[in-house]
Amino acid sequence: MKFTLKGEVLFSKEAENALEDIKGFVEQANNEIFQKGVSPDQKDDASQIVEWNLKGNSLHLKIVSGRRGRAHDALLRIKKPLTQLLGPKYHIGVRKITVENYCIEIPSREIIDVSQMPYVEDSAFEDGRMIIKFQKLEEGDLRKHVVDRVVKHVLAETKNLQEESDEDADDILTRQVTKIEPGTIVGRSPKFPIFFEGDPTEEAARRGWVKKFPGKGQWFYGPQFIALQRAIEDIFLEVLVEKLGFYECMWPKLIPIPVMNKMRYLEGLPEGMYYCSAPRRDPEVFKKFKNELLIRKEVPIERLKDGLKDPSYVLAPAQCEPFYEFFSHEVLDEKDLPIKLFDKSGWTYRWEAGGAKGLDRVHEFQRTELVWMGTPEQVEEIRDATLEISQELANQMELEWYTEIGDDPFYLEGRKVEERGIQFPDVPKYEMRLVVPGADKGVAAVSANVHGTHFTEGFSIKETHNHTLWTGCTGIGTTRWLFGFLAQKGFDEVNWPDMVRDKVNNVITPKVLTWP
Image (cartoon, rainbow, N blue to C red; front, side):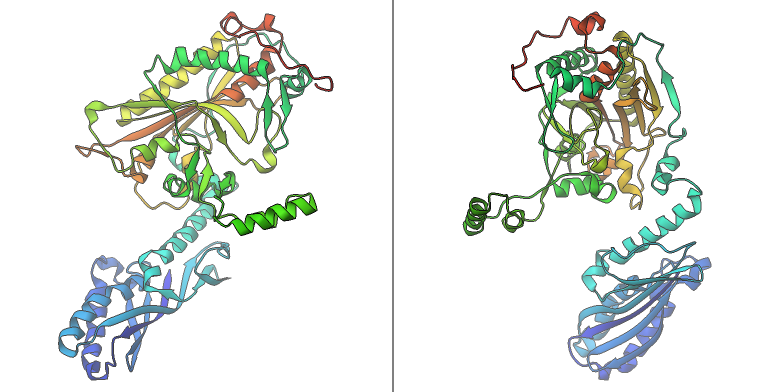
């Protein structure tokens, strides 16, 4: 790697009288300041000021470096000692530091797309090298490490290219972390009787159990469907949630964007969420909106946009987000662990784009979300217990299932470019799937995750003795469990196991002449 920077140090006044001292300072910077922290075998990578000239109150520099002691860091490092040199003797201060031109060369097998990255002006690929040119950068940009983040992105992508062969690059980190090959089946049920053939979504709609809602990936769930859902939900509460000592909470579903940033969702899956904007306090805009609606008799979307603030929230895509925010910057005592909470108060929202279909893949769905925190041993033990009980419940309901190593732990999406030393479990995710007759793959009904220190680091959650804290979560996908149940057992209650049938309440569906 090669970093070539042309920058300017703007002094508080003309510095011609300090020319000789500045000359000596440049030599000191090259021989001492820039060498600090660089190991002897990497001295050639350290920054060097290769050209400089002083014009009035501006010191123009050209700094070249390798990967260690990068040129932009070197520019920042000279500010304080230069001020200490010139201040007492010449009453000159450093007013401003600017990078006028910055070019970075990174070895790569092929070009990496950085066209949409901020601060990047241009890029090219020549002789096995990515050449990245930056826009003008201010001191604040350098201190926010914007250059380092662009470099990390390119390095991560080039590493993916080297390692992936025919694999999907998005899967690289998952395969590095997971000690068992993702997709490996680690458990399977015995065979049970199947009483249904066909599409459960079509049959549920034909019977009036559900009705398509106008929004993409949305359904109106009727009394029969919800009666069955409540029965299965109650079984899980009794046999799993209460048995393992989880306590119920009610968590917000409107999640501020800064919280999602700490979750690392914005880096990993920004296209998979619904974003929410609050209205502006501007009656005139909405008066125009109402008048245009009145006259045109259609919703003036562009006028509506004028009345909205920038997005400031997302609808909860994981449901566990408030748990980590609740403990953010708090200190816990290991003797009070583990902490086990759950929420079943509302919807989870995912934007599936073209992937929404039927009742098994929707944009809003019901889950019972269990989240816990403790020592690494406690967290893995609880995760394993939630999975084992879920599998046993499926057996008792006479449902065929299989459990596999998950290939998409949701929290790893934001770690394609790593910034911290995070502890990961050997198996981040188990996914339990209910068999759907005739389908190649079962429906994912239980997702059991251990996050290592991903969230405790991200949300600055500490243990008073500095012991390691891990978190875990298990999502019981109630809606998907029902889909798998109906796909195997059908809609006739006589074919349902007693433990389910006995809990289903008698309900009445509204009579409508034109539906279903």
